[in-house]
Length: 342
Image 1 (cartoon, one colour):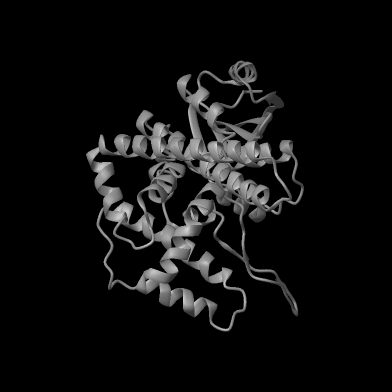
Image 2 (tube, rainbow, N blue to C red):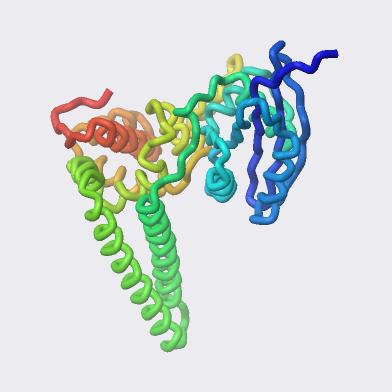
């Protein structure tokens, strides 16, 4: 029997915090797809080395280089993506929305690590993944900005928690004064660190003239400040993975989910299956924009018309702000006040 030539090799990876599951698939000249192995590995440096060695044993030297396909799941995929890229492998990082729709279109109801890795590998087989679909890591400068902005978010949470604790201590019965003093010192320390990070962020941004100009353009939107913009663009790596607004909104978890079946009509809500850091960064700016931005204020009032819960309007404004950041970033131009958002 003549062995068929392998035309395509794909490794589907279902990634998790502590481990990941891989499925190695190949396609021959007759379009037949075969699984050459499935295995779980630790999401650690040692596990990654073992994983690459396992893949090399299955790789057909005469066939095109395999493509490693994985989902952009929080930060858990990053170390493996960097490891493969630094070892000259082809990596494709796909948005969760794409893979979810693909699974639904294939009527996949079972959800396990093994099944998901096979589904991701099949996705890679069926899609014509070109050069534009291959993952490239953010620049060193962009990684620095991302790390600083994430630490800024962490410190803001610590300050909020510490102030809440201080309020409780102030109103408790005969709290030991030294404890209150220590809590105030802690808050003061956090605030100083926050100031250091903000100055460092501005310093880093100003070294890139083009990046600084883009951010200044987006700052023309009332409600969007420098830090908020930095947090959003650093989480999406300058929008490199996104080709349209729908993908971006879904990635942020701001897409609408409807629950309807027959006569039953459930509550309409956002999915929240996305980057929580983006939603966190946009919440307070959305509250401010709903008051001070003419277009967004009108939109906020329309959404909240006849609603007792005003949160729907805030979420809607968050989505509009995200779209504005994306649009102004792509167009590299300032905000036009008279322009009506669609």
